[in-house]
Amino acid sequence: MLLFPHKEEKASFKEMTFYVLSAREAVNEQLSQLLRLAGFNQIEKVQQALGQVRNLTLSPGAWGLIIDIGDRTQVEEMVPAIQALVPRNLWCCVTGDSDSITLAQRFARHGIAYFYLNAQSDEMMQAAANGATAKVRRRAVSVSVLGCKGGIGNTTLAWKLANRLVQQRQMPTLFIQGRAGSRDLDLVIGKKVSRHTVAVNKHLDAMSWEEMPLPSLEHENFEKYNFVVFEESINAADKEQMRQIVERTSCLILIMDRSMSSVRTVCSLTEIIDAINRSHPTPRRFLLCLNDSRPITSDMLNLDDLQALLGRQLDVIFPYHNARASSYFPSLRRQRSPMAVLTQKVLGESTPAEKSLLQRLTEKREEG
Image 1: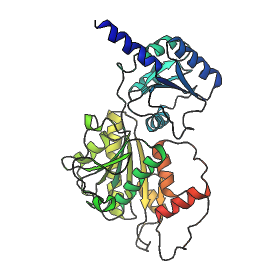
Image 2: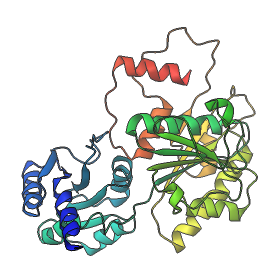
Image 3: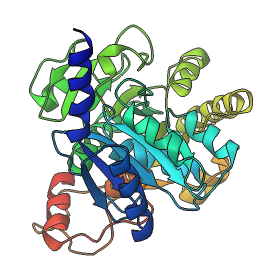
Image 4: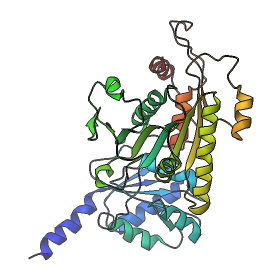
């Protein structure tokens, strides 16, 4: 008697939709034919390259996705794009022209299977058919926005980043405020924030965290989120607290001002990152942002001195915004806003999409 329900369940998944993402028309058709031979009837072809697709509209019956990367081997660039595009509950694999075992291993560290297109098509179709039962748990994009000094707008920038991720990807996102944060997030969202998640909108939840610098995202409570943005002030954190944050973060964003105390905090964290990378070479991104939250004075470090002390270039600069001096109408210049640049870097986008006049006006109003 148990055999009949099993057969019905086996047949039902064949009616679900499978997606193929490839910029190459021939590969798109090749993978679609293989999926049909494997028994999948509903196949959607997306003829675009990874990194060009900003939003992937999926049907309620979506089963899986195969991504063709061609001859690309830059895993550290491709993984953020995959994590930002594919929901965590959707089976996904990558295929390409390289037969490198090392390449497959580098993808596997992130919970993503890689198959050599010219020799592993059978293994790929078997994995696609068994996707629901042999699903490898992919990690969330864990973004830590760390303030190197109090009162420099860390919470505001982190909150704007979380909202931009939701606007651009429409994926489940969680904003976590750490125990050393400003504790005024409830005023921003108009709801009481506690250690239990509270819904802010359709795709964004928020919570506070007191026990440790960063919760383990492997816990089942965090399985549904594609993005987790953790906001914390680290100017008074010890080395062990910093180490825990670094080890559990895939993208570190340091917010600093022009003071020597910010420079010291950045240098301390950089030493910890370098030490971790030497012993555990797990790819993680490190973005350094300067936020001029108050007018620049003569006793502050200039950009050249600041970057010389840090030993690296700044990734994003948020200039001081004087509301009184601003015109009633926002500037229409085509230069991208610092927050748009930061969001692009977090998402791993290579080239920014051209924005309409209405989009630029909306961005200026939000940042004002």
